[in-house]
Length: 321
Ligand SMILES: C[S@@+](CC[C@H](N)C(=O)[O-])C[C@H]1O[C@@H](n2cnc3c(N)ncnc32)[C@H](O)[C@@H]1O
Image (tube, rainbow, N blue to C red):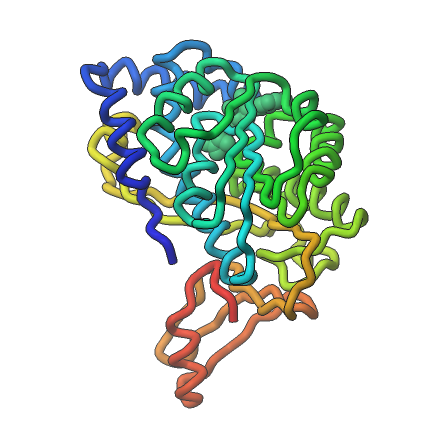
């Protein structure tokens, strides 16, 4: 498992940008943006350099950690995946590009696109601090228009982005993004029931076009979960003091909930079952909720079966079995 903390170069670039910043002002901006997001307003509330920085300070650590967890799951399933090019759609402050640069050493080209001018300006500034990302290209405009003209890439990512599209735009985006994916498309969304529903709709649409699921599902069939249950995962990340202050939080960590799907054109090995919640450990047994190729399974490893009990005790939410 890769570290969930921001890479040192990015943390340093954010610290440099934040020098002399009023944390109170940034916290007020982050709170206002969060309110707009909850009201369905998306990133349109980010209009100035100060807004963009407040957004990055408040949210980048968590979305970075979520994308890293997804890339870990993808790499565990596809150790042979050696992408050369990344297309980061709705790149915002560049979060997914930083994560991909950190996790995937073979990446050579990074193409970012986003509609938001303030986030683009911040991303370009932050990327000056990265040896890998200084040569990245970042185009401003609507993703649907830009994607139609974009160069295909081995890895296409849309992280916390499709929730800002209408249903109709999302379908068009899915088709365009898949059309530009030569190997793998990764979609990450907030780990809410609606986030999962959006991931699921895109997943079904693209499976019908020949995509196969790399992770998290061990199959390409329908999701076995039924409402009010939903498929999501959680990633713990450290909070810096500034991050704590900005979020008005007491704890030195936070748990980011996310839903995701990684879809590929590549041939896949049989996919292992995945743990869908934190396993329950008692003195008698470990019980784990699993998504298997045959559907949902509540697997029990009794203490008397020592090897299974020991193996299950090490399992975490999101692991494969
Ligand atoms: C919540 S931010 C996520 C940013 C980044 N991907 C991350 O994970 O931190 C959503 C981003 O999607 C961009 N976005 C939303 N709709 C878009 C569209 N139609 N075309 C281009 N960018 C869009 C927004 O401008 C914003 O930067």
